[in-house]
Amino acid sequence: MALLAAMLFMNACDVEKEPYIQGVEDEKFILTFRVDSIYGTIDEDTKVVRLDFTAGTDVSHLVPTITISNYAAIEPESGVAQDFTHPVYYTVTAMNGTTAQYMVEAVVHDAENEKSILSFRFDALDKDGIIDEVARKIDFVLPAETDVTQLVPTIEVSEGATVEPASGVAQDFTNPVTYTVTAQNGTTAVYTVTVIVEGGNVEPTGKTVLIKDFTGARCVNCPAAAEYAHNLQHQLGEDHIFIMSVHAGYLAQPLGQFPDFLTDEGTAWYNNHDSNPLFSVDHVALTDGNTLKVEQIDAPVAAALEEEQAFEIVVTPQFEVTTRQLQVGVQTLALENLDGQFSITVCLVEDHIIGWQTIPGGVDKEYDFRNVFRGTLNGANGEEFESLHVNANDSFRFNYSSEINADYNADECYLMVYISLGDKILQTAVKKIK
Figure 1 (tube, one colour):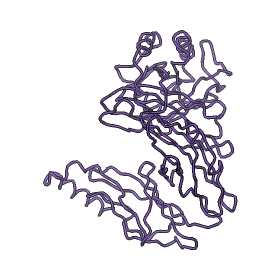
Figure 2: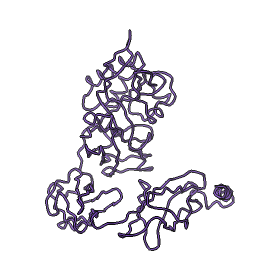
Figure 3: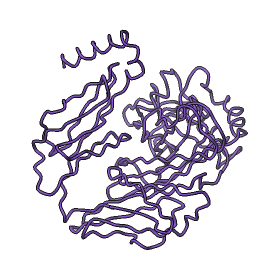
Figure 4: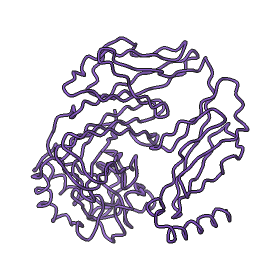
């Protein structure tokens, strides 16, 4: 560690002496990762490096050769033997001290356990899918006006494995389609195939507004505020206003029989405010400029509903009841030319949770908590996908995965997905996970 600190100190000095270095101080990537002639597949989105070995390979003492960003450092170092029986974590440290952690896993292939899609193509269109073996997703971008409702794929899978739906069977790819590959030993792997049509194959549905209701189970005035917001939703647009209850602040701290709905993201959004209830309308975080009391939300909500729809969002969840694994595909379409920094945030919400809530005069022990924010799949600030400009008809595709807490009622869980421009939410979409 002392050596690493010294390197970073020296590099920091180099920035001042050698201006050409400026601009790379934050770079912290693994560029290549190999063991002898085996090169790892690097998924930069998930920070996962996968090494594939033939059956019988001993992975308990492998010596990797690693290349990383210029002026960065890595720990463990390149050339140091590691036991890859289990995943090994590598930390890349940039010149400015920021870090990125990669998980490196070694996969030893067993013929009876092989369950991969080797190729996936539409012969009639002469198009091959882009296969991401780590995320188990296959993507196509097809020409505008392509009819995706009856596409016939030709699929090649591992020797001895089977796939369902079968190769040669027409499918409607308007939404992502999942394919299950079964190995000889009965184990399975699920792939998600997504087809995007140039120019977008989603239809605008209208502007949708997100109200974040910052609340707490021990807040005596919060039930009335929530009722006010829901009444406003009924008056102005059931299908175009969504309310997400974010439990944050002192009055959301669990005490005795009161529920614990606190989340790290909700606390970050709340931003150290000192009272509940508070509201934000189409904003990612509470600031002095968009903190609203209950009686102040009418005009901002009405004004937001009048705005032009900037994006269309289509959310496609796949939930496995037995394992409680959730796979989420999100397709977006820009509807106008826009400049700025764009991000997408994927939230998990659970509706109709019964528990204790303080009310005027006492405690309601059977209170119905509505649309409780349970966390995000990609962080409080979401995932940035463009920092400069989007054109009308630009389409973007995202994939996420998560395991749903066993205590959550999956029948009442929703995904609430929104796209932001800076600190303003442009569009929101909601979808049940099952």
